[in-house]
Image (tube, rainbow, N blue to C red; front, side, top):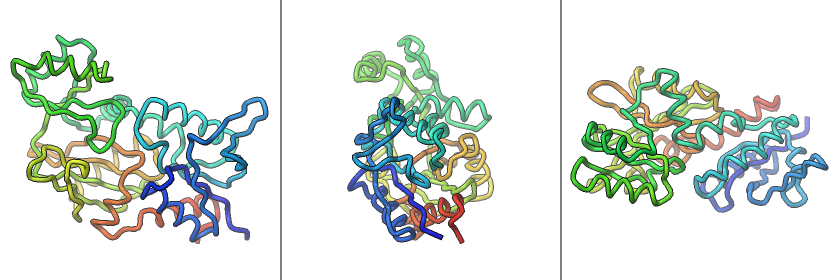
Length: 296
């Protein structure tokens, strides 16, 4: 049986994208890395190309990154992949499942409708409503709708300058205010990873002593962690809402029980490797090979 042709949608020189492409190449002899910024969809001819490479010629595509930064235009790139998927090329994860995760609000609404416990959250464009939410919560995190690794997030406490801070945050490209109560954390939060809906491993992000966030962009460090069954089951329920091939669920353990921050479409590779020694890229490549009928 000839080796399948599997392409990786990612970012050149991106650590996780390159690692996944190398894992695919080690198994198939080739692991082309394709940036969606280079892709052209010709609807008249019915073709999707990156240079001379037609995406319709692949046996499967694995999506690792849609771009260097989270932004609304990534939704348009997903529409191109949706076309490829509808033309019969298996895409992991499917564009439909990824669409709800690019926009933080879409992800949050889907999780809450599914009954997944999360920190108290208010979404509004109205500054008076936003002020009331901050007063009610006491300490909050303002979160951009398109971001990752806590980039662009701001800590805000109830006080005299709340209105000014909210106006400034809104004017800096955040017309819809996503206001989440800051919940006490035990110095870390968790990344709970799943492959094909099955639990893979868990790591914790230990926050820097001077930071309020645990993200690695704020100095957080990856460490191994063995979660209890309650955490794993909650994370399993959360990821099941979206049906992703690979995902990492951000969970925080509180005195009142575990809460979910978000479900990530693209994260987890580095944390799993550094904390657990788990080669998520290799496991993902094996999973896709098996899914398209070329696995052992």
